[in-house]
Length: 105
Image 1 (cartoon, one colour):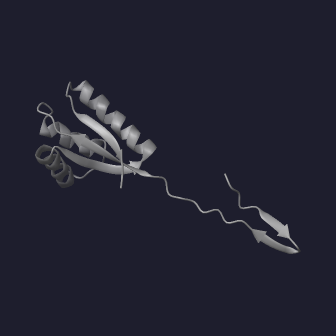
Image 2 (image 1 turned 90 degrees about the horizontal axis):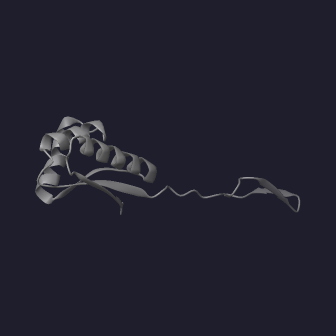
Image 3 (image 1 turned 90 degrees about the vertical axis):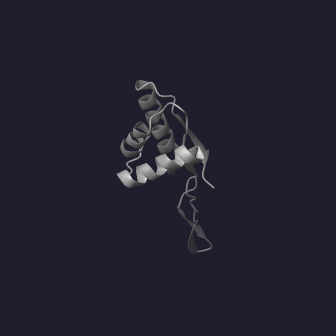
């Protein structure tokens, strides 16, 4: 990891510039199945992904009609945590809701 330490060079003080890159983002995707209820998917979107009701319903309908819907885009650690929470909730309610992650862009 680079530092921003000043260095001296022939009587002139210079400073290295370190260019930081934003971390890659990951999409959390919900997939359609024939058993998970629409109400459960909306509840997951509202509680895990903090979506307001109208947006949660819109995403749920995308999952229902297109077979998948993007629940959110996050850094890897956040996406992985949300994916785990969805899987735990689905397992507790005995739903086979599939939730995956994919690199955004």
